[in-house]
Image 1: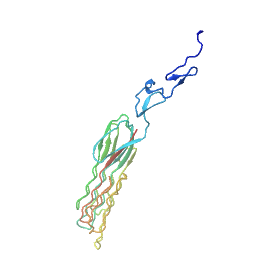
Image 2 (image 1 turned 135 degrees about the vertical axis):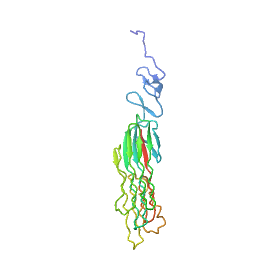
Image 3 (image 1 turned 90 degrees about the horizontal axis):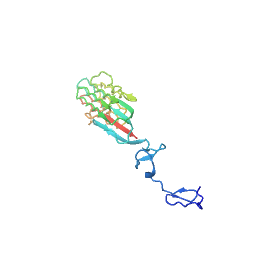
Image 4 (image 1 turned 90 degrees about the vertical axis):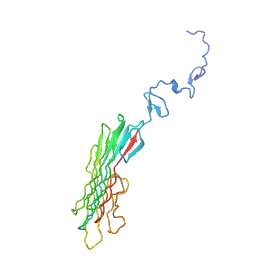
Length: 265
């Protein structure tokens, strides 16, 4: 027994007091903690006494209009990948028979949500837009777009080029692709039309519309044969089909493909 004890000692420093002891404000700093991990401006202390990066949420976006490589940024764990294939070029108009060209089909689309915690990069392929057909020539089919990361493969097919004859059928959009949570074919191009010889209205087919939602629709249909832009009914959005050419006129070019990657922590 401490029989010589008369009064409680008074403590000073980070802990103060004589009976009930009090930790001083701002006295416990990071160096005094035994937490695992690394303390930094971008981490927080969890309930299990570990330093961890801040919680999830949208962080950034990468957009590809040309083939290349997606490289995962630091701290990204999830992505939403949107793939759009190239559209089909519009068919050229006929020299004879008063036939205009049909519109090209739009490229297919796909969406996929991916956990990329163990994926560092992906090979990006962007399908080119199909060129419009010259006079009496079918439009060029659009190119395939794809995402390939070694674990996941997402592929979308290009739209079919527009027709040239008076067959009366639509040019198909890109066939339904594969690998996405949602896989969608592209919209069909509008059929071409034969025009009564008594009129100068040479209506061609409008290009198919892609589900990308970027830019305008496919190339518009021609009206009067004397319009100044008859050789340029190009698509104005990614993956959309080009419009067909009026009689004796070339078809329009389609829109190229697109891949955009929404990145989440």
